Length: 489
Image (cartoon, rainbow, N blue to C red; front, top):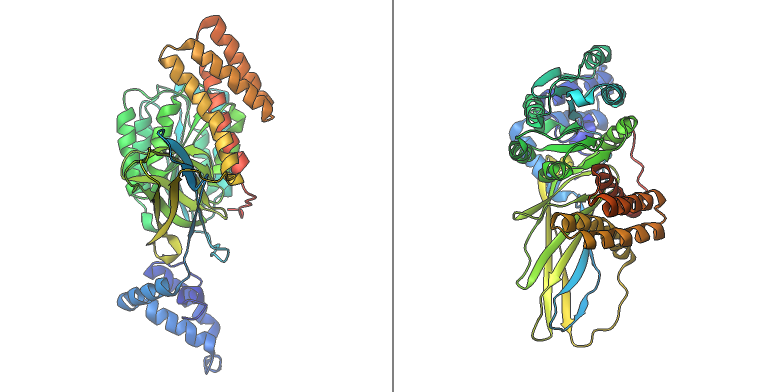
């Protein structure tokens, strides 16, 4: 097939509707109004042929299948292991695997329209600076969206209100005036805001958009956490991504992690109201440039091998939910790829042996009408009596070093919940030292302050918990981040 597709000839993505095709053809054919300009004109013939094929459902389906078959692989999977030979021993041994899914360098950079919903907490605790900063941030985000994008705004407390129904970004002043009218009142019931937002988003043809809901809250939800998780799982099946940001310290970080897990989304801690705009801008950056949707890793490990832990490194640091037959990785957005680190335990073997570890990631390719692509790779791990010493790849060394600090902080809280105050204090002191060695002075000071608090009152602060948890989490992403400059929205 020629390098320029029929979609290229019409200036359309492969997801274009029949109405889009008719509109584009009508606009382009006008350039050939003179009969003389049509005679033996390859451009005119290509345009006409493109329209004839793409406007016919049966011919378009055949053309799309040929397009997929003749296209180069849309995504590439690479796998590295911390070691490929391990010593034959009576003890279980850990091997780390770094998986990276990357788009080709020639990947199309066309931007797809976004169907974005902002679900905003307007409970009484948001009154004052928090709500004012939130309103200002949302106004600035509206300015960043394109005319073809859809915006829905929901405010919620113990009930939800539709601030703006799904609408194109045309009359920004009207949208902004509705935002400014939001008033704080009531308690926090996240399910109300989540349900209303998703219902509004589903009024649009989801297959034509990159669909994403961003939830902001400053409090614990009351009695509806399980309903929220179930709804997030359904939203993932409808290709609606979810991010959740907590403002201040009085919210449940474990709940927000669970909420975003089904879609491979991001949760984050916003310490100060003035930071809201930075988090929103960072999240929507590159959101419309999606090479693959709904990436998921199939769990298919051989016997005597156990997946212990999983963590997404890029495009943002986030723990992975390991339950179920697949691990959800989210979308592949912008110029960069998706990187994850897996910790796999190899149980003792009686004899020298080779164990093949298969990896299979499935994605829906946006530029190929969401056709599925399966990416496969495998690595052999050899149990040997006297394996030669070998240095692990530096990318894995960096990732594990940063991840260990994050997990050390998580272990502190596990110790406290189990009543092991002494063990928690020892871990905190060790974490303080590691953070100082890493040059993270502010986080080290926070860890030291929490150590003193633990010694004086026997507990840690909620603010300290979140600063250390999300601070060490951010270190992972910052360390692994390759230079990745997204195009503007």
